[in-house]
Length: 311
Image (cartoon, rainbow, N blue to C red; front, side):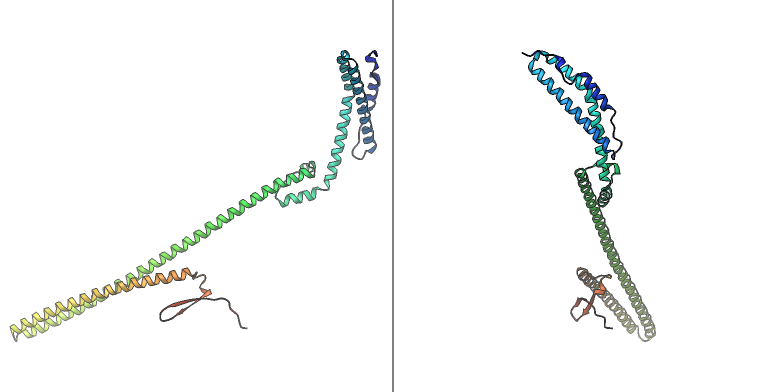
């Protein structure tokens, strides 16, 4: 069986320290430093290969002698720890440059990306946009576009509800005005009828008073002729007056009832006619689109289809 010895590790500690020290000071001076980039990359690969060889050699020793496993692992770790920080540092330097290169490539995409965000009313800083690859940017745009559509839909719904509320208010105001106008017309007609009746009653009362005065004069003239004749004449005059009053009162009552019926019928007809106009969309705003034809028995509503101006 082969004798195991920790001294068999190759390369030796001194060689690894020298190798690490040789690469430790390597740097890359910006994205245009191709030589520096290549040197760092080659050094990183060399350290990676050396680390792999050390690990492989350590594994071989562990398989041959388990009793040395602990010591092998310890020295393996010790050796790797010498170069791994440098490897990681170099990897980090490469990653910084690689990211900077990607960022430089995306600078040309900034105008198009900003324009696309403007279309969907979204915002992002230049740094945020440069940090996104194509998939990340598309995912970001998809989310913002969904939010944009949601805002747009909400705004459209708010506008629709606002317009409906305004239309409902206009209709309510119109109905209220029409009702107020109708009631005003009814009150106005009632006042006219009352004034007319009062004038008629006053006229009849004047006629009666004049007749009574005349009858009294005639009675006085006939009093000297005959007491009986005067009495008969007086009774006849009183009876005539009573009958005349009854007839006059009856006529006034009949006229009043007739006028009330006629007024009621007139109001009903007017209401029916207004409903007919309203049902057919006839109003002050639309009346220029119609014309009315009156016959003996009806009123016909025609709608104007179009008009040709003869020049």
